[in-house]
Amino acid sequence: MANPDRIKAVADGIIARRKEGHQLVVVVSAMGDATDDLIALAKQVNAKPDPREMDMLLATGEQQAIALTAMAIKAKGCDAVSFTGPQVGIITDSRHTKARIIGVRTARIRKALAAGRIVIVAGFQGESKGEEITTLGRGGSDLTAVALAAALKAEACEFYKDVRGIMTTDPRIVPEARSLPVITYDEMLEMASLGSQVLNARSVEYAKRFRVPLVVKSSLEDVKGTIIVSEEEGMEKVLVRGITYAKNEAKVTVLGVPDKPGIAAELFRTLAAADLNVDVIIQDVSESGITNITFTVGRDELARTLEVVKGAAARIGAEDVQSDENVGKVSIIGIGMRSHSGVAAAMFEALAHAGINIEMISTSEIKISCVIDRARVVDAVKALHHRFRLEEDQVELGKPFLLAPEGQERRGGGRKRKSMARKSTARKSTARKASKRSRNRARKRSFRVGSARRSRGRGRKR
Image (cartoon, rainbow, N blue to C red; front, side, top):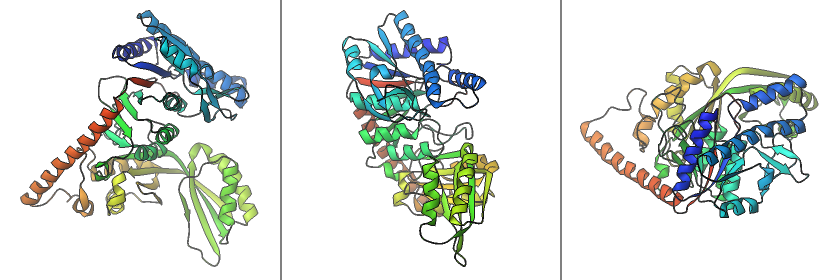
């Protein structure tokens, strides 16, 4: 949606889907750098703009985009109508710039669909119960699309991005990265929260709650893309589905903390009250009743975090607070970790072989994250992608692969290789069947909610 030509191309795609017999609701984000331009304009007037007025200003970016998209569709002989978020009944709480959706009224959309129109909706915005314009924050347009799909009971919610689907990792770092045919909600949630830029975690969480199948496709080429669904039989056989990274991390260490019940609760309660999100947390072994607590936050929140933590440290009797902005995080994600041992060992071996030191470790059932030197994040992604053979088709590689020394995992006798090849063929078939079942289920009905996004631009993710 960066320019008129792209808007016309989006209109062509929408009309093509309409001719397939689908009723369509299309959620549109602002054009190109429109959001950045509006933010810059606001800061020229006021260095610290009022959040309510920022919502009033930023919501206009999507209003331009929906009107232009509807115009482009009408120019090609197809009927369309554009609506803002408040006009279609997207109700939010009263928190400006980061509002949460609390309800969706669909009567106006259903009426337009019944009249044979394509409905174009402004993403990223809604209206509070106090009748104030609100915006949804990062990933707001994706969240709008999923919320509408859930409320309308759509069969699927399709996202058109500037990538081929959900990739095994960032193809700008690893050109051999593959598009995944299918992925679970839980895996996508982890990938989104750990640095993947394709979908926002809030939208995936919403889709999982209401069981809305998601499809991520390319806006630039005709490829199948990735289906995001509930876990199915056979999907757990893939050990690692993808690798994510984040460079916008910062580490905070509170030194000399009294090792007594309630101290950690007081520290993190203070951070929560300031609406600061904490990621990885480590507490050292206590010595003489004193310990250290280290955690990570987003680098853009470091200054505010330090201000809050220093006040809390004084209250709990800690000795000092230190920080480090030169850290990053690399993570591996896959539901197969739940039933296979040795995944962590393989990850740590790969990082060690690349000469990368691990500073902090965080795990869940389906992910392992390591905080490392920010300058080595790219090297870590490359090493892990190679170690887990993610450039190859999705197959279960098993314990012999995981426990093999670095550089020797492909060795073995001819008889063993043939056996593994037969197993791989069977497992590929299982993965293909799971993917096919997901795709068939997502195509049973004809109703679609789609999200059209700009293909270029440095604007913040909407």
